[in-house]
Image 1 (tube, helix red, strand yellow):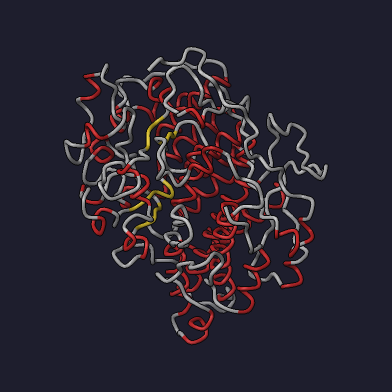
Image 2: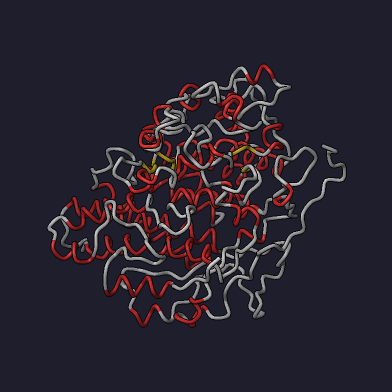
Length: 542
């Protein structure tokens, strides 16, 4: 791995001096729908162009590492760090770094990608926010302002939950190598008004500081986004999405009353219902149809990610292709322990290939082509489909969508939050939701912890492969268990933890300490390879 060579300060300086989307790793690709500072100065519709650049940047291809294809790549990074998402061991597996926890410290390019990508996204949102004076703006521009605030809040909420240090079984006291207690520290806050001088004295925000900042952005988003009429295809946030972001924020802050309140507001405002079995398992349009979600990313034929053929969401997430990464080796599976626990009467179980000893379940598996019945490994994913079911032509197959927020998540946030507030009430909500998934489902309330565990299990099944489980594992101190009898994790990824994994505390890049002394000595400790591998006491002789 190459050493990193840029910091947050470099991103801020780029925003102060030149283009909105210039290179941070060689050959960064920001061409589709983005706007430079020069364009902003000349175009009468510059704000509109910048707003269009917000969803476009989610699909950006950085060009240095096939794992660097924007927001869906970040989703996958989080997924492979859990234990419900398994990838077949293969030389083509571009995400093994995060799954194996090999080089997650501050001196590597993988840390550079995550940090720089998010701050570049925030820079674009800052540019939108900085262009609109709410005291003088027309209603349309106020709508743009609301969208800018929603995006900035969404990116910071992701970053805060990834970078916040939470104590764990490797670093139980929260101390880093310099002896500083970093528990509760997130990442530096870069706003549209931050100066160069301020960027050099910008410490990591505490949990409380970051929470208040994001809440303020979402309050502004809620105020202004009602003026927007541009979200015709679910690619831009709406008021329902703002409510959903608030539900996520309050869940992170363990304010369960507000999490429950805003999850319900999101459900009601969206007007959506949970996806049906036919919609979710359809070989042509299963989990590639953005109209079924509150918010998502949508590829077009002009996107560079599409033109590459293989550096995009479908290539890595969809097993049912002959051109993509997944279809050529590193196929995606659900963890065996999760599949086994899921009821056979739950139709979602058909979204993964059934084992040979489950012939009745195997009959329910639907394939875009019969050949994939043999190509896919047991427990292989059938969730994310190529566009129109076209498994051969990448220029068609990858013009697909990926989910950023679904109404199903709001139902499950509401249930968990209710259970934290009053034992048993969340189970009632869970039982109601699960009727959409399994008519025979009935969970009898037990202890509050057991109830929350069940809600979390169903949430992880529901949102499998959507980059969400990571946040709940980290927040609730849930152990990751990859080593067990019959596991489908291969040998080098079989780590078991006693609580949240240390590797879920992301590190800022080292150079940040040089450009921004306020973070010097306050980075998270390096979590790379801190766990021993689980060894099967009864290995197979074959």
